[in-house]
Structures are given as C-alpha cells and as structure tokens.
Image (cartoon, rainbow, N blue to C red; front, side, top):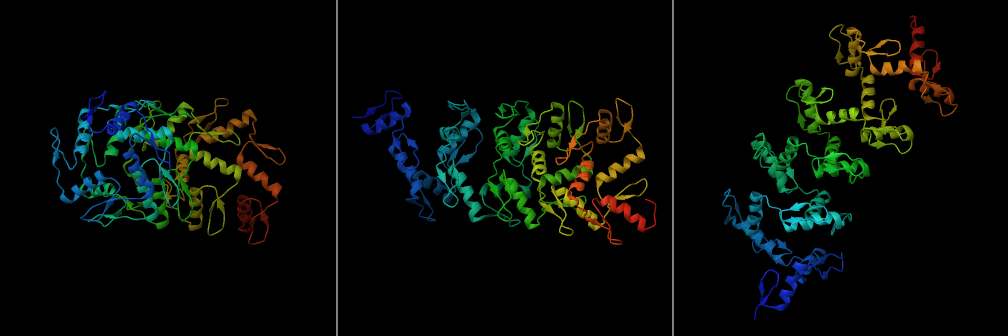
Length: 506
C-alpha cells in the first residue's frame, strides 16, 4: 500500500521514506554529523557527507579509474567520455549532458529565483545555491585543508586552495604552452589568442571575453549601490566590491609570498607581486616597448601616449586617465577620511597613505640603497634616490635644454618659464606657483609652528626646519668634506662648504 504525503501528494512505497520526505516540508534535520555538526534532513545525505571526512570514493569510472564520492557525480562524469549532449534547450538550442543542467539553464531564460534567504532576502535560482549562501550567515566552513588547516565554505574553494600547495597546472595552452590550474582559466586564456568575445552587453552592445568582465561593466550603466559598508557607510554596486573594501578595515592579509613573507589581502595581488621576484614583465607597450609586471600599470602608462582622460569629475570637471584616481579625487570634495591612525588620530583618504604615515611613528625604513646604505620609508623614494647615483637625467626642458632626474622636477622647473602664480594669498595678495608654497607662506601670517621638537619643545613652521634642528640634539654630522675632513649635519651645508674649496662664491 503506497504512503502519500499530505503536503505535496507525493507517494512512497515505504513509510520510512515518507517520514524522511516530510522533513523537507518541516525543515527538520535530525541527522547530525558527529565530526563537524552539520545537520541533514535524510540519513542518506549524512552518509554522503561523511565521505568528505573519510575520503571514501566508492564509485569508480571503468574507463579512466577516476573515483567519486557520489553516484550521480559518476553518472555526470561518464558523459564526458561519450561527449553526448542529449538534453537541448528549446529556446536557445544549447545542449547539455545532464537533465539537471538543462533545468538549471532554463531558469536563466525565465529569470525566476524562487529560493529566498530568510536572513537577508537575497534570492537564488537553485536550492543548492541558497544552501551555500546560508554558510555566509552561519560562518560554517566544513572543508578543511589538511596541510595548513585553513577552512572553506565550499569544496571547490578547497580544491582551488590545494593547488597553491601542489603548484600543479594540469591544463596547458596548445598555442603558447602556458599552464593553468583550472580548466576555466585555460578557456578564458584561449580567448586572448582567438580574440573571441562571446559576452555582449544588451545596453551598449560592448563585447567581453569573460562573463565577470561583463557583470563588472553592467555596473557602469546603473547608479544603484545597494551594498553599504558597516564601518564607513561607503556604498558599492556589487557584493564582491564591498567584500574587497571591508578587507581594508579588517587589515586581514591571508596571501603570503613564500620568498619574502610579504602578505596581501587578495590572491591577485600576491600573483602580481610574485612577478617581481621572477623579473617577469609580460605586459609590453607597443609604442615604446616599455614592459610592466601588471596589466593595469601598462594601461596607466598608455595614457601618457594617448593623453586620454575619460574619467571626469562632475563637481569640478577635472579629468583623469584612470577611474581609481577619479575616485580618490572625489574624496577631496566629500572630505571623507575613513582611515584613522590609532596613535595620533590623523585621518587619511586611502589605506596606503595611512600605512605610510604609520612609518613616521615606528621610524621604520625598509627600503635600503645597496650603494650607500641610505634607507627610505617608501619604495619610490629609493628609486628616485638611485637615479642620483646613476647620474641619469632623461627629462629635458624643451625651452632651455636643462635636464632633470625626475619628471616632477621638470614640471616644477617649467613653471619658472611660465611665471604663473595661480595660488594667491588672501591676506597680502602675494602669488605662488605651488599650493604648498602658499600653505607655507600662510604660516608667516598666523605665526603657527605646527612642527614641534619632542626633546626641547621648540616649534617650527616647516618640517625641514625641524629635521635640521633634530641634528643639534643628536650631534650627528654624517656629511664629511673629503678635502679638509670638516663634517656637517646636512648635505646642503656640505655642498655650500665645497664651493669654498672650488673658489666659487657661495
């Protein structure tokens, strides 16, 4: 005698099967894993789950001996040998090997998302997607790496993570022999050779090689930013952008370089950093052949040749070559400074500026010149310093042919020809070429001396004056004249002294 469900009228041959089925309607999950405490509605589901912990894979493919934990996974795998795709979508004629894949695909045409999260109301097309999403709220991460004990919410994430330990790249490009950890990554890479762009924006018809690139592009058509940061109330158009932003607040850096132990918040940052050890610069400018380790660095460089500045500020109409520079600029209008130093409460618009500021408290100077052992807080300061040793002056003024080590020095020099003084003091109408010069001048009116010596409390209007004063306490005179061995606390004083030996007027 068949047993019928009172809710959906489905019939079962055994009462025990009916009782298990009823738990789907009640939400009851009486079968609990003793290892990780995950609960299941059916005993069979628990048995399948336990194989994750035991590593048991009882279902073996007779053709290639590959084993699986679930029977339906084996069935799905067998279709890869036959390459038969019997299930065809009547709307777009796309074919599938498995009927469940066809059913999942059909939802993409209807746009239906019947499975809704009761906590945050996010909707999903499939129940499995909802179950995976619920782990975000519960914090459940049942898949643990046996090598480093890092836990993951999904098995696929664990598989991807394990490749970082094995360094295995089983998928190779037939054209350029480049290896990839994932088959999907190889597929995307092949499009760089074929120039194929199958993903089309329905609004502006722009084409993309990756679906993720299309999704990112679609955000440019909408001003809707529903995802807000709990810490600084900044809003984002996508959840992934919000997650990336929140890492700035937590300071979490899970991806560590094995060569120098430098840590990064994102895996792509680690990959880009790894190129610096290899000396690899795969992105080459077609105009001047200059090469770069990162793709965005090449894009930034190309704007020098094109002088293109497509990103315009709606408030002051200032144009920028890159979107992230525009976003940083917008903070000057809003006055938003989300990154605050815990030691002195000074705030900054960007996290990297805060990190640079923290070095002023620690006194750390990690970048050291191999020639003279002079240390610097920032990498670009070391690069700038190295040019002083090389003597290279590649930036030449077209008006007077004077050469400079840096572009910034040339830009400063060009103003001496223009004689423009756009920054005017409101108190005495004196004009200045640079904004920082005006700021410095204003201190002469206010008599403000913000830079105070921590040893004797003497105040100074300029930071350079304070630095010069600090040598009087240290009594250090590292700059020594090679002619008469007279020593000085600053390089500037030594240069002035050397003019005496050269019999030139100081």
